[in-house]
Length: 271
Image 1 (cartoon, helix red, strand yellow):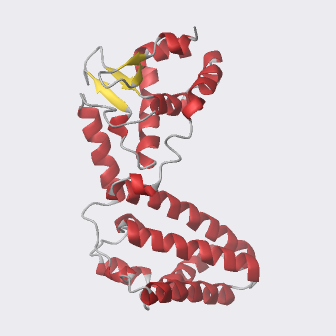
Image 2: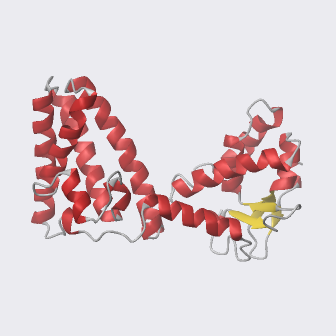
Image 3: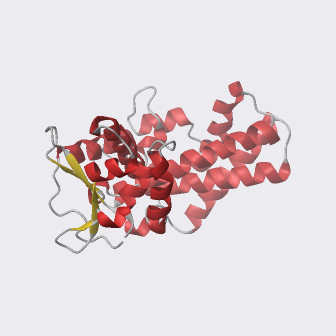
């Protein structure tokens, strides 16, 4: 029998799990203290994916000398991804837990609550903005000092003339707070669409100068706004601002999780 099968257990709902202290021994870690840092990295990855981390990481006896975790298969997969790759057993563990490696990554937005959607979409918007940044640098010849104006053109088109600063003011944000961290899921999804279309237009048209790139971004924003209007949907500037920022959501989720234990972990999970 496989080593990981030997230490696999089932909870009262018939769902499989692995104890962290048993897993660390097989992976070759000498102390729980060192392994805890791997668990923390994996927790963050789970939270950032928008999934309910308490369904995958159930802490036992928090803060005690014998603290432990019950880890779902998905949690184990995240753990071995973040583990020390120089340890021989880690490669075998990746292969074993990769059987369901796509569980967390393939979750559709309709399976998440609003907070989960916000976290998932915020990460997607960040990725889209990185790609848009690259396209604007390459095909629009934008320099670092040009990007504030470039993004404002996109926002002006989408938000009916409002700049990023105007949007922040409407949301009641303080200086330095990122407007994307204070958007609900619908507003984030709209901005993902705006960023994706702008990137594609830049790559197709290759304006070669900042003014052309700004024009394209504004036109894309206006096009997306027009689509919302044609469907009778809420304009992005009229979307309600969530009570908690993305950073606060992640902090609250992690704090709650670490206060455990969660006696009903995995109750509705399918693996």
